[in-house]
Length: 361
Ligand code: TLP
Image (cartoon, rainbow, N blue to C red; front, side, top):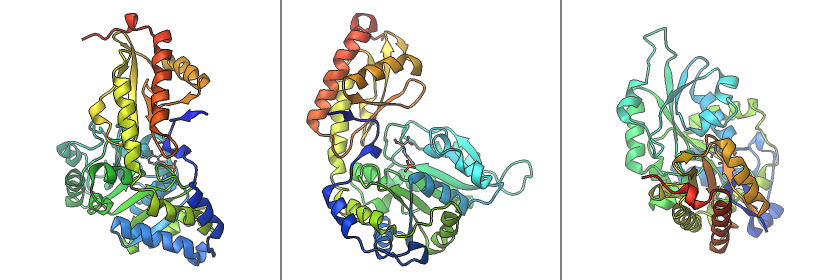
C-alpha cells in the first residue's frame, strides 16, 4: 500500500459519491438544464454567501475565468509572489487574457503588507503603467504551507483594494480547510470578496470540479468566458452529484486531515535534518526543508531522497527550490502518518547521518 502524500488531489471518490453519480439526474448544462449542476451551484452560492455560482472543470479554470471576467486585455491583476495563479496555472491570464500579473511579495501567512499592497496599485491616470483592476488572494495558501487567513485579515486586504476601485478574487481552492481550521463559516472569510474559486476535487474528495462564485451579474459574464475556454459541459450532473456529496458530507472531516498534518509536522520537526515551522501548520499542508548540517538541500539534492522514499512506498512532492511538501487527506489515517514518519526517519538516518546533519544554532 503506497502512502501518497503528494497532494489532496489524489483523493478517491467516496462510496456515497459513486452512488450519487450513478443515480444523478442530468440534462444539458449549456442550456442550464442539468438539475444536478443547478443544485450544486445553488448550494455552493449559499455556502459562500454569494448570489450565484458556476461549475467549472478545475481550480485553474475557475481562477482563469475569474481573471478574464474581471480584467480587460491590458489591465493588471495583483498576485502574490507565491500565488498558485502566478506560478502554477500555465500563464493563463496573460496567454488567454492579455492580463499583466503584478507581483507583490507574500508575507509568510500568505497575506500582504497592507501599505506595500496599497503602493502597488496604479490607476488610469498614467499611460506608463497598466491599470490595476483586481487583487487576487489565496486562502489557504498552498506555498505558504497551508496557512489560513482569518476574517479580519481578509477584510483588511479587501478594503485596501476596494478603496481604490479594484475587485477582489479569492483563490479558495482550499477555503473550506481555512474555515474548519479557524472555526468560522466559510461565508465570513469571503464576505467582502467579489469572487471566489473553490475546489471539490482536493480535500473534499470529489473526482472532478470546482465552483466559481460571485454576484449574479458576474456569474452571467463568467458563463461566456467559461464557454470560450471550452468549459461548457453537457450532462455534467454526473460530476456535480459527487460535488453535492462533497459539500454535504466531507467538510467537517477536514479537521482529521489537519490533525494528521500536525502529527506529521511534529514528528518531522524532531528530526535534526529537517527544518519546519510547526506553528505554521494550521491545515493539511506540511512544507519543510532538508539540511545537511547548516547547508539547505537544493531541489537536485532532494531528488534521490524522494526517489528512495518512493521505493519504500511513500510519496511526497517537491515544490521547487528545495521545498518538500506532504499533504494529508481523506484515505490517509494516523497509522499511515506514523509509518510515513518511520520511513522518513530511517531514510534520513542513512542518507544524511545526524552526525553530519547536526543543526547549527
Ligand atoms: N494545486 C495543486 C498543484 O497545482 C500544485 C496541488 O497539488 O496543490 N489554487 C490552489 C491554491 C491550488 O493548490 C491548486 C492546485 C489550484 C488552484 C488549481 O486547481 P486544479 O488542479 O483543479 O486546476
